[in-house]
Image (cartoon, rainbow, N blue to C red; front, side, top):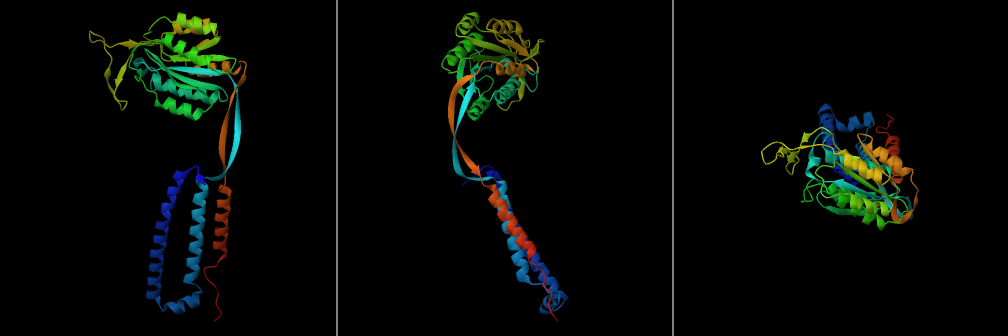
Length: 331
């Protein structure tokens, strides 16, 4: 048996505190009765028994324990299933160059891009999705997969400056994306470039020709604004410790370079988008593309069993309520 919300089991640590509180409450009650008068006569006249109160309290505590176990979502009994994927093959290339630290979109370009990729993953469930990180070089971070949990973990591990080669190598990102998509199973293949297009390294046209030859449609999503903004330099805690400057000590400004991104997307039969609806527009177009079988994934699921614990909790609560604390005595 496993618990899906096992952190809620920590609530069980409050049970001893409740028991201790009850113990001191009973001691105080007994002391007050002794001070008031003869305890035996009082119990007879009032018809109240210590044993009944203890039994009611015991039943209540057991009910609380079962309720805590229920909300922790106990699961046991495995069920196997095969999840078949039918969709398109998608590679997402994320710019990790230093200019992605710019804060012309909130909280900054990189975090905005990462948030947009999460939206893409949620909107395109059922499609095979992979991930590439690039700056002056491009590296495959996650092959195309239907396991979106793994994809999210890889995405969370990415950071600005993780690739020590400066620049924005659109050529390498496109080439890497095309080579990755060639290994896919779907008939329709899509590369999504998310970048500000700043400080381009190399000429993307040669890689673009390869994409057209392989039938890869490229969608580009521009992150940032057309107005120049400074590039923050951040420490490992994400705090700004200055701004990037040139050799003369002047702040270097970065802006969205949309011309090249438009050229890449339109020539490959994709599209260029920017703004708050950029990813939405991309996913809307991908959803309209031809789907094909992209493989299957075996999954093992545990069955929910919380209802048994809820039933036991209610049973003990009903028993506690049916036991009277005081019994009328014949005088």
